[in-house]
Length: 285
Image (cartoon, rainbow, N blue to C red; front, side):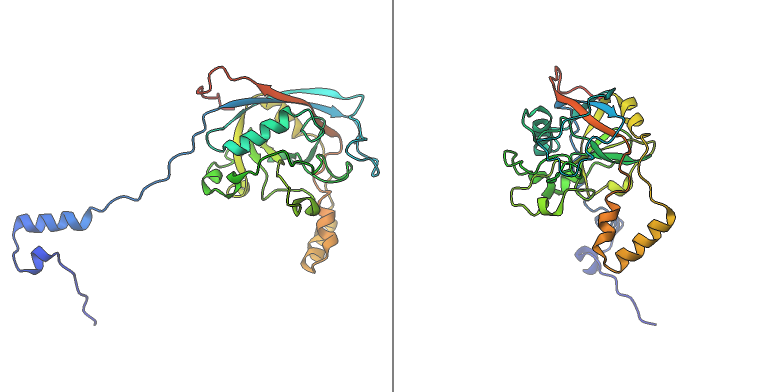
């Protein structure tokens, strides 16, 4: 049996052993500096914006030849209500700045009159997809006026989990933007999601950036989650999985239609609300 060797502190290896020295050596051996924990994200609410949602009884983007500038919103829409968001400007300042610009811009490249393009019941919904055609996308790819968001390459940006309903997150792993759009050197990611609950969405953690929370209107968020969506049959799902396994690109194109709402929920208005006390803590839903 191989013998194990024990390294003794110099004071003991020299042969000078006393009760005091033994106690000192034990203390040296057992006490070690604790690892430095990263600071907790600062989720002080620095900005507030609002999103007004409306429901159109039909899909108002049914004309495949309609471009972003030629399509008008639904004329017989029903208001669903206002959602007020508190944004974490100290945690991810560039993400918050970009989101505010998209809410306040008067140009065609804003969130106003853009629909929710995916709803995952009991989890989250997506909005702000970019592309060239109005029947498949919601926002044009001309976002050169937006600064580059370096938050997306900072590990601290991803520390907040998608732990409850009413969290606002920048879509990176869940991004549905057109491939051609994302390859453009002037591409800026503005697609976002809002968690609807009732439970957490751990599958979103580490790949998307939580940058705010719902302060008012969580009931509007949960009502949006109940809008019916396109769901393929089990046979179609299995066929699609097999096609994807074989590397058929049409499988991914078919998946893009899954979870699309059958009625159009869109952002009928949006803007900024001034914060009178930036340091207040939100009442969590």
